[in-house]
Image 1 (cartoon, rainbow, N blue to C red):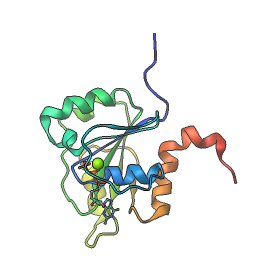
Image 2 (cartoon, rainbow, N blue to C red):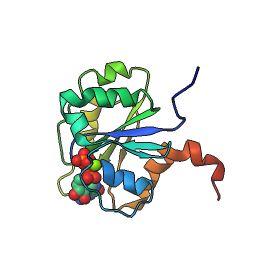
Image 3 (cartoon, helix red, strand yellow):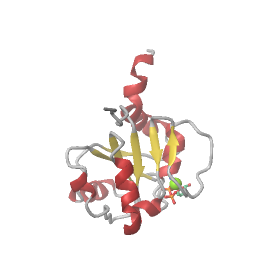
Image 4 (cartoon, rainbow, N blue to C red):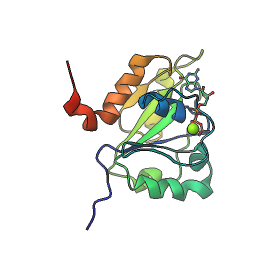
Length: 159
Ligand SMILES: Nc1nc2c(ncn2[C@@H]2O[C@H](COP(=O)(O)OP(=O)(O)OP(=O)(O)O)[C@@H](O)[C@H]2O)c(=O)[nH]1
Ligand SMILES: [Mg+2]
């Protein structure tokens, strides 16, 4: 019997253009400009970036749901300037018992209202931690990195 779940593995999900790949690249120190994600992208055993289409198109839900069974953490990525969110039908039910965290991106944009976005995410059923980031704010990225990757990097801490 093999155990498929990788300790600490996470998967980013969210609408097209939410900032998943930008965040993913920041988390793994990749100095690349995000281009449209066409397929699932794996970073070793640590993380998975997904195309926004998988999140937004009902006929693609199965791809997300199948892959999510193999990860420990789901991370819903949401832009700070968008005030509605619609999680794929059945996602929360399928993952009852697993934590879904959220990262609110693009905090540098004008007109963001974090309190409103946070309330919206809670109303949508996100019960885990909610982080807010801007891709140019390294401290905000570092908080997410520590949360998502500390299980694998904890022993190499130096201070
Ligand atoms: N201002 C600002 N723009 C951002 C930030 N993060 C991402 N963006 C921009 O948002 C756009 C979409 O970013 P991506 O990272 O490609 O979004 P994605 O969620 O991976 O999109 P798909 O691959 O289509 O699902 C790009 O133009 C990014 O430069 C941020 O923190 N601030
Ligand atoms: Mg992408």
